[in-house]
Length: 623
Image (tube, rainbow, N blue to C red; front, side):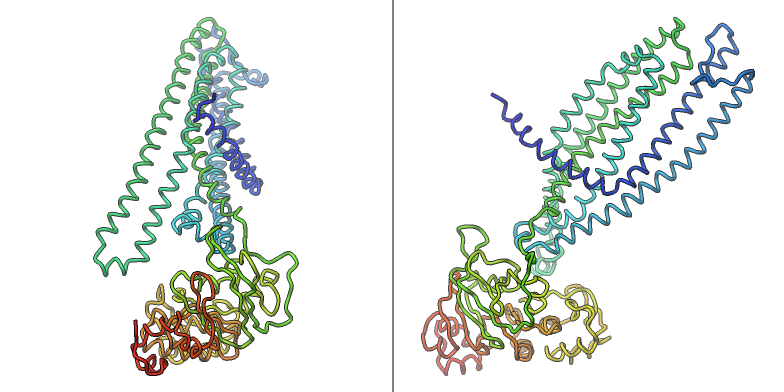
C-alpha cells in the first residue's frame, strides 16, 4: 500500500504540471524577446569557449617552445597558421582573446537591455494590467470569498513571482541547459573517459534536486498565505487608524502586525535554512568532481594521453559545468516560488465571470424604468437563503422604500438590479426584460446607485462627479450637482469644481460627500435610482440637506431606497418591510402604522424628535 505522503505527491503533480504549462504558454507570448535573449547568450557562450580554448592552445605553444619533446598544440579543425613562429602565434592568440573580450562586453550590454525590456517594460506591466482588468470584471462573490490582502498581493507579489519564472527559470534554465550541452560535447571531444569519471556523481545531484523540489512546493504555498495575512493586517491598520487612535489601541495593532510579520519571518527562515544547506551540498559534490579530474587528468598528462593545455581547458570547462549545476539549486528554488505565485495569478485570470453580457443580448429602445421582482430567490451559499419569494413591481417614476433589520437582505435585494449578483431563483425584470438578457454596460448606465458610505476618489470634484461619464461637459456636471443640491458648497471650495479631494474626501462633511455621490449617480440621467440607506451615517442637520437632494434626484425616476428613518420612509409611495429575507409587510406609511406590526414598532422606537412625533399622529413613543 503506498505511503500517504507519496499519494499526496502524486495528487499534486498534475496541478504543478498544469501551472507549468500555463507559465510556458504565457512565456510563448513573448517568444521573440526570449529568443533574442537566447541568441545573446549563445553568442556569449561561444565567445567564452573560444577564449578558453585559445588559452589552452597558448599554454601548449609555450610549453612546446620551451620543450620541443612536449606534444604540439592541437588547433581546432586544423586551423594552425603555417610557418608562424611561437611568438607570432602567441601575439595572434592574445589579439583574438582581447577582441573576444571586447565583443563579450558589447554583447553583455545588449543582453542586459534585452532582459530589462522583456521583464520590466513588457511582461510585468502587461500581466499586472491583465490581472487588474480581470479583477474589475469579476462579480462581488469573488471579493466576498477573498480577503483584500490576498487580492492586493496577487497584483503585486504574485505577479513578480510569475515574472521570476521567465527571468530566473525559463531564461536561466534554458541558458544552463544550453551551456551544459555545449560543455559536455567539448569535454567528450577532449577525452571521453575523463568526462565520464569527472561527472560520475551527477546523478546524486539530480536526486537531491528532486527531493528539494518536492519539499519546496508546500513551503512556498504556505509562505504566500502568511504574506497575505500580513498585508491584510497592514491594510486594516491603515484604513482603521482613526478607530485605533480613538480607542488607544496603537500598541495592540502594532503587536498584531508584528505577530503576522514574525510568522512570515519564521517561515522564510525555515525556507532559507533549507536552501542554504542545499546549495553548499551541491557545490561540495561538484568539488569532488574536480578532485577526480585532477587525479585522473594528471595521470593522463603523465602518459601523454592529454596535453597540459587540454587539461587546463578541461578543468575550466568542468568548473563552469559545476557552476551551472550549482545554479540548478537557485533555479529550482525560483521555480517553486513561481509555481506558487502562478497558481494564485491564474486563479484570478481563470476565475469565472459569473455576471457578464449574454452572447445574444436583448436591447431596449429606451429605458422606461419599470421594475419587477418575480418570485426572486437568492443565496450566497446553497442551503442558506438570503431572499425568499420576493415578488413586487414598481411603476415608472414611483418610489419604493425598503425597511428591515440588519441582515434582512435589503442591500442584497438592491444589488440584484444592476447585477452585482444574479438571482439564484426567479427573475428580476426591467421594462419586462430579464436583466440577465440585457447588455451589462447598458443596464448599469441606466441605474444610478448611491451607497451608505460613498467612496470618492483622490481627484477633483468635477472628475469625481464625472466618474461614470468622463466625457461629460462642465455644464452637465454642474447641472447634476445642482439637482443634488451640491452646487452651492462646491463653489465655495478653494478651487470650486477643480478642488482636489483628499484621500477618502476627509476635507468634506458626510452630507457633502453624499450629495456629490448623488450628483455622480445622476450625471448619466438614469431611469432607475437605487439609494442604499444614504442618510444612516450622518447627523440630523446634514440629513435635511441630503433628503432635499434626494427629493430632487428621485423626481421622475423609478427609485428604490433602503432606509430606517421615518423622515426617509415617509417620502416613498410604498414601503416594503423585509423580515428574514421575506416581504413581511407592504403598504404606505399610514397603512403600515395602522396595522401596529413590524413597521409600527420600528417607527415607535424613533419617536424622539418633533417630525417623527407628528408622523406618529401625536402618539407617545413606546418600546
